[in-house]
Amino acid sequence: MGRKRAIPIRWRVAAALLLAALGAIGWQWWEFIHWTPPREEYPVQGALVGARDGATDFVALKAVGANFVYLEGSTGAKDRDPSFAMNLAAVRGSGLPFGVVHHYDPCVRADHQAANFVTIVPRDGSLLPPAIELRRIADRCQPRVSEAEVESELTTFLNQVEGHVGKPAILKVYPEFEERYAISARVERNLWLVRDRFQPDYAGRPWALWTANTHLSSPAAEDPLRWVVAQP
Image (cartoon, rainbow, N blue to C red; front, side):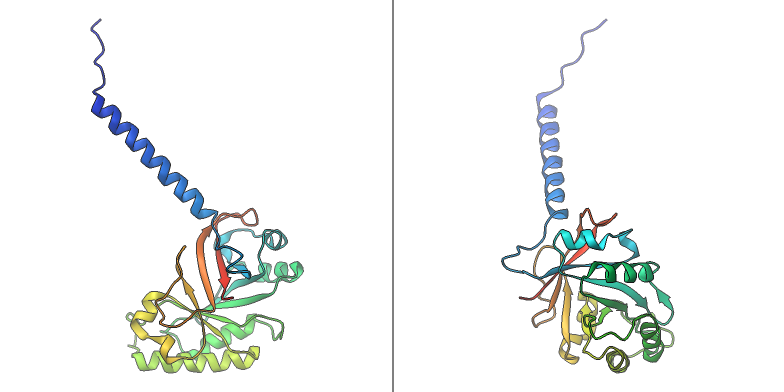
């Protein structure tokens, strides 16, 4: 049998460097999915929970440091988070303060969306302010919806929802929506912004809530949670 070829030194070096790089990436990812902002800077922290997170133990969530919870609730005029009813009952039993999120659809009339929200969200003065997620833009709406109509319908929706819950809503604004409509300068409400690891500044004014980690690994949920902090 012939002698085996020796592996060139440059290949060995390249393989070692590749393994080191993969190890570093793996460590950075592990660190990220276990990272939350320091408590000394942000003492009030919580989570956003919906069907995408799998089964969530709210008592365990409280035990690992959550001070509040937002539940995924309604979307547009008809859709609702499949786990909302179950999560609502469970979070009430945990004693955690909680609020509800509505995913706003600029293609759908405001009164239809408000009806969807108020049907599932009880009148309860102890609830946190409702959060309105603004992510989808109106480019594909049929018939066409102008920027002025987006703002007008959103204002109508807010008036109806706030009349139901008895407190101002918070706007959960994504960068693409803000870039298109500059809504933070047009509608005066507290803001909830989203950016992993680093403080978001795309709204041009301070946030009240910040989704700081969209993939937090937690023993309280089957799948990664979205971890949220409140402005001190």
